[in-house]
Length: 580
Ligand SMILES: *[C@@H]1O[C@H](CO)[C@@H](O)[C@H](O)[C@H]1NC(C)=O
Ligand SMILES: *[C@@H]1O[C@H](CO)[C@@H](O)[C@H](O)[C@H]1NC(C)=O
Ligand SMILES: *[C@@H]1O[C@H](CO)[C@@H](O)[C@H](O)[C@H]1NC(C)=O
Ligand SMILES: *[C@@H]1O[C@H](CO)[C@@H](O)[C@H](O)[C@H]1NC(C)=O
Ligand SMILES: *[C@@H]1O[C@H](CO)[C@@H](O)[C@H](O)[C@H]1NC(C)=O
Ligand SMILES: *[C@@H]1O[C@H](CO)[C@@H](O)[C@H](O)[C@H]1NC(C)=O
Ligand SMILES: *[C@@H]1O[C@H](CO)[C@@H](O)[C@H](O)[C@H]1NC(C)=O
Ligand SMILES: *[C@@H]1O[C@H](CO)[C@@H](O)[C@H](O)[C@H]1NC(C)=O
Ligand SMILES: *[C@@H]1O[C@H](CO)[C@@H](O)[C@H](O)[C@H]1NC(C)=O
Image (cartoon, rainbow, N blue to C red):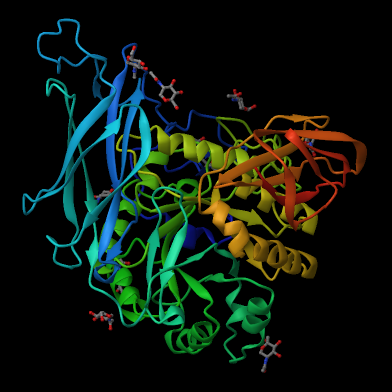
């Protein structure tokens, strides 16, 4: 967000909540992401750096189980689990590649398939028994709801794996929700395999689920929900193609949220438009009474997409338990909707803050900053000092994709194999504090493509209205990502990132392979047009470009290569190739 430290000190102090001893910066030293930012203070190690587990020499077998979706509804009638049985040097239980399952055969057989049984702990019912290959991931295993009663509390599920001879054993568990079916409001589920969001609400008459690729802004309430009631701002916003909105609440109100009667009127319009609200509790989420009150007001809105709690809790250095406390309360009050938050720091208590959300946003704002010298505070910026508006950034558009990669790497190195979708918040503001100018539409679209290329499963922006060009362009490219053609790839698999590119080092390209087709996303980081040949090395041979979803139609395919002559400055292309 863009409010950085432009608030009155008293309000900031209030919002910071309880100061904890967890931080290295003492309370008298104003800090952001744990780093002192005033020239009157010295640099110090902010602490809170992610602790990567130490790899072990011997292989482990890491068995993990998750529900395919964050929630099931009784009306789904059946569900599925995702089972991984990975050879890991970080997590898991000891593994020897031998199984003495053939009597009399002294040398034994290789241990290449793991037998397993999956139980519901509460009833003791056996749900499934079968086997999976050792070192396989993403095994989808169906189960019936027959032994479950729909309810709002989760069920604990465990998997027990063994080598064929029964000598080596593995266990893991998870929780699943099988919720009462809905006839009002909305239910929103996360695909734990590929990160997409699926909705059931009035729009599909509560029958089944439809995918949505969220693309929308944090919006200025004074514009989209003015106090002198007018729908024109909101209607203009929706007509530009956005399918989600986060209306920024007013921290100055007694309940630190929205004027209730007024929001209800605007929300009626959002229901008519099927424009999804990411309900923002940034000022209220550290007060459990406010959480309960606000959930009770809005939980049954048909266009409630999810709850949004902390806005840059790591930057503000909120209590480390603050996001998880809010999360647990929200889970209890309303299991039908995911919880999201945005992290601003590159590496500051990730596991604590991220434990409080299902979906993690990043908001690296790299455009028109000075990444090494703090413009408002007049200090250097580095790993231990200073605030340059984009934590540990280099000041390139790629800071956005690098930050997504960082978060995904941290998450993958936490035990428990809990995947969390990542989204980005893209800079659509400037001419203030750290950011000398507002990004151009080309820069914004480039950051959108970089985000999707690096597995962002939703996009938001700070803040609407931006320039007219940026509003229109982000809506247009967003419509491409929302299209059924693109979503089949983005929600149908994960991106193969960082395809090798010859001829232009600053081109970022990713591939998504689904069935007999491959989508390619291209973002050129070069600000000027150039005319030399660019070749992208494909992860699989293709035969033709069948569809240009966005950008240039000058690419041609030959086997494992995709080639064009020259690219426009910051060009963005989205292509679909046929593989055979
Ligand atoms: C959360 O952390 C704060 C600050 O460290 C502490 O005062 C508080 O007791 C903690 N709350 C709970 C419920 O653990
Ligand atoms: C940090 O700077 C603030 C503001 O100038 C000052 O009040 C405080 O004493 C300084 N603290 C230290 C430890 O230098
Ligand atoms: C186990 O041994 C078999 C036979 O040598 C081999 O094919 C397989 O790759 C090994 N598996 C692992 C996970 O080491
Ligand atoms: C396990 O699978 C991974 C990913 O496919 C592969 O890189 C690795 O070599 C495999 N390990 C063994 C021991 O087969
Ligand atoms: C509402 O207020 C805004 C900002 O003060 C103004 O631009 C707009 O014209 C007003 N709309 C109506 C319908 O009065
Ligand atoms: C929490 O919110 C309630 C309801 O708005 C308010 O009465 C109470 O004073 C708040 N508590 C704190 C500690 O701010
Ligand atoms: C929302 O709907 C659910 C299910 O119909 C109901 O149990 C709950 O009381 C409703 N919440 C409010 C605040 O009306
Ligand atoms: C950043 O600020 C420093 C100090 O004023 C200056 O030397 C440097 O050229 C600036 N860099 C950019 C990219 O503006
Ligand atoms: C960061 O800059 C400060 C001020 O110049 C310096 O004292 C400190 O050593 C630097 N930290 C690192 C990690 O370079």
